[in-house]
Image 1 (cartoon, rainbow over the protein chains, first blue to last red):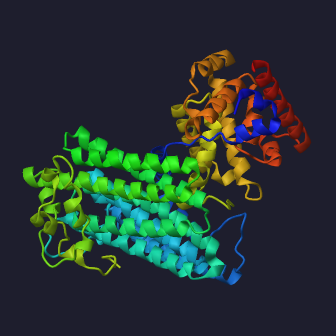
Image 2: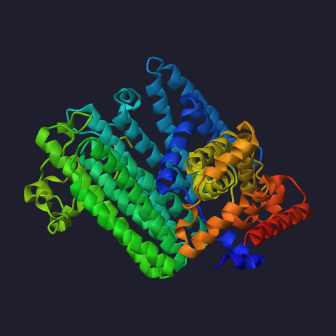
Length: 414
Length: 172
């Protein structure tokens, strides 16, 4: 197009319409996290609990409840509940943090039940919220040793073999997280079978897809601090749930829309990869293999963008998907190296590292491992790749602890 | 997207994911294409959305409400600048070559050229062009945001577009 063509108002409008500016996907996610931190920190914990209790009944001047019988029943329950809260609070004055958490946990179960009365999607959303809470608790547990005091001991999974309270807490939180995530996905799958709930299903799938991205980011970060088998399993699970939710969220999109979303998702993985790579580089860890991997993924991503610009949306989708999976693989390279490094020098975790490294156990299926068999040969063709290859004895080591191998997904305290 | 009410973090997240791109674009184009500043201000808009969530009237459009918050933040921003001149100077120093990255080369040049010329419009005219043709809001929505009647807004928008055309013609 030439400048003179802008005399035509239609051409000018079409140029204006085509102006597109987007924030980086990395910014999007870090801003969301920072906003969430701000909004949750602004409310004191006890006020938050009361607010949540009020929210249970959707008590709003704009939308008064239609079902009066239900309303009065809930008010009665509310009064009983408030009495219980008072007793629980008063009887635990010595440890207010723990008492509040205890009440908080009780409310969670009530919230799920009430959300179930509202709708399936509300209940699915509630399970996602709870999974998010566990992830936030996990994050603060690993970031700040002092916050340990605020994590309720009820999360600690029963693990007689373990001599570490921290490890028990991590396992308990992770188990509860897995449980909530699985419940949310189960609801999503139920909704998928119901044609009348298509819109709600899409909304929940989008929410789940966005949430699992965040969860994944926290879990990867957690893994950089402690190589815990439960965390690895949780990350695997989150990946799978996120992928399935992502595919569901694309229903109804045309080829262009799918390509666009695939690229956005790949960009997110790229940003996540770069973030972790930067951290490792800062700490002087070897990241050659991961960097090579990122280089290859970037090339594929460029091709995906070119195909998109050319209008070949299907090819663009395939390439973006390939790039996304490759970025995921690159993340594994970073932490695989770290595991090897920490094994050599006995350090690498903020929480007594040796206790959190994976135990060598036998008889566990490979597909449960975060580092799969395929990765053994990934680096075969790369210069200097041999040094980073996983030896057979290493691979067998990348499996769960005894506790981490249970397929059954139940919270430790449920 | 239909927003009923922001009651919790989940509602807030869904609002953020639905509107962050639109609000970022609006701010970025209005503050002279400064990425870091646009990011900070976009974050501030969403913080205000959370703080003022109780004030949102669910009978009205959420979209116009959030744009109004962004617009008020921009007005504050301009006010805090010592003089309008200073602001203009800052704009003039910005290079535009990063905006049309996603478009093909010819289109990229045209987009940068149009954006550069848009700086010759008054701030009010520029705002109308951004809201109507770049953000692609309905005239009715713009009227609500700028607090004018529908017909008046329509006339203003046409005038602004006509003026932009004149500026481009003179240059060509």
